[in-house]
Length: 242
Ligand code: OAD
Image 1 (cartoon, helix red, strand yellow):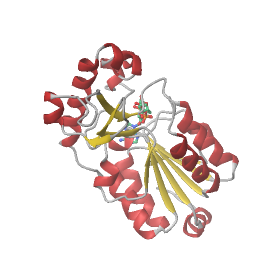
Image 2: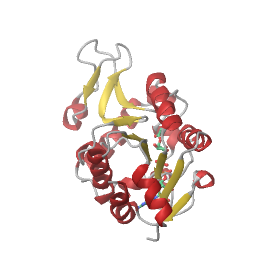
Image 3: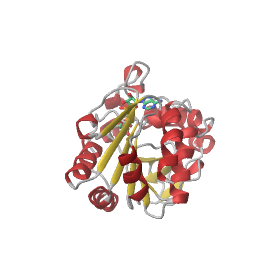
C-alpha cells in the first residue's frame, strides 16, 4: 500500500475519526452480503422478508428467515478487519463507529463505541409495548409472543420503508459533520441515508477513505479508494493511525 508522507502525517495528526461499515466487512467472516453475486437479495425477495407489510402478512415466514440468519451468524467470528477497528478505538480517544450491520461482530471483536443504525439481529422488540429482549433462536422457534403483553415480537432491525431512529441518526450526522477522517468500508451505497453521511462528512472537510473490493455509491466522495478486501487492507492501514 503506497501512502505518501503527507498523508501519513495527516493520518497521525487527525483528531476525530469515524468508520462507517457495511456488510462487506463481515464477508470474510462468512456472513452473506445483501448485494452482489452471492448476496441475500439475489436469493430472497426483500419485500417478502424485510418490510413491516411482510411481517404483518406472514410473521412466521419472516421469523423463519431471521432465525436462519441468526443461527448462521452465531457460528461466525470477527475477522482481521473488525479487529483492526477495535484496535483503532483502543488507541484513539475520538474514534467512533457507525455500522449498518446487524450481526454484532464489531462488538464481538472488542469495539465498544458502536452505533448500529440498522439495529441488531440478536435483539427483538414487541410491536405493541416496544419492550426489547435478547433473541434466543431456540425460544423464538417455540414462541414469538411478548412475555410482557403477549403481542408479537419482531426482530429489532430496520426494515425497508421504515424511518431511522431519530436519536441514532442525529448522533450519526453529528459524527459525520465533525470527523476529520472517515472510513467507508464494505458498503454498496444502495441505501441512501448512509451515503448521505459520507456526503455530509465530505462537505464538512473530512478526508474520506473507502475500502471496497469494487467501486460503490460512495466512491464519488472518496479522497482515497483502496480496492481490495477489508480484512487485508485495514490491518495494513490502521498502524498509520496509531
Ligand atoms: P451490500 O450487500 O449492499 O454491499 C456489500 C458491499 O461490500 C459491496 O459494495 C461489496 O463490493 C463490498 N464487499 C464485499 N466483500 C468485501 C470485502 N471482503 N472487503 C470489502 N468490501 C467488500 O451491503 P450494505 O451496503 O451493508 O439494510 O447494505 C446496506 C443495507 O442494505 C443493509 O444494512 C441492509 C440491506 O438491505 C437493511 O436491512 C435495512
